[in-house]
Length: 264
Image (tube, rainbow, N blue to C red; front, top):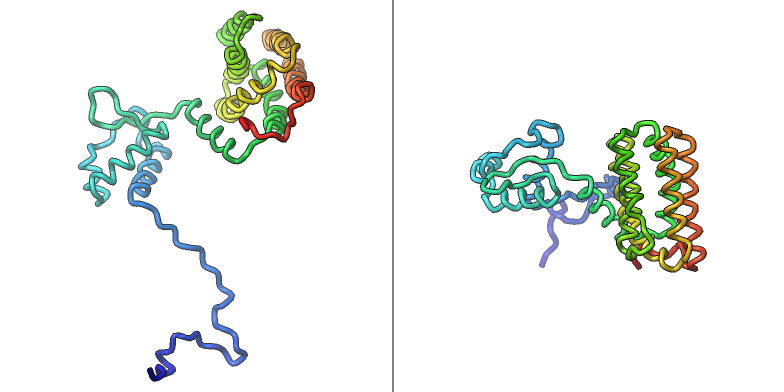
């Protein structure tokens, strides 16, 4: 086959110096997403900017398909994804999706799962607890209400020596949650919930290997409850910091390496 004329050649033209024009330019790959993801993103944008409020119902699937210019099945997939993420729900007896706010538990579950997939270690959990939980305890001491104290006291009353491992660990996690709720700070509560969820398997790996662990947990929580009741923010922070240091010490006594992966 004869060579193509120069003007049709597929080879890049070179400058007089031999360089390819524009060779230094870098372009990011074009992101190709399924249509249902684009529909979900458009709906989520309207929900997060409050154009569609919590409790408001979306139009029927056929109407949404008409507005977006896609098939009904595409809309259905988008709605299913948002429902899974806790942004939408279908009330019994209704065919329409209703906008809702995902619970803190649902948000935490997704974050905790992502953290676990990134090989979070026991040391990571301890370090994060050290940074976050003492300020939360201090805020709880300043902002707690009688209802918060009643909840905390109720959790302490359930702490007995005959609890099974799973129940003891969950009760400890619930205490942390109650302290977080007592701050009445939405950011604090959302931030520490994934961490508390990771505390459960971390504490479960250690608690039965350290004979004094349960007693020290109960004592620390009683001291914390007293400082929160007294509205003593500084003391609450100090006792929470001691409580978290005991977590670290427990792993040392149990001879569990802190660089082990949570749940591994």
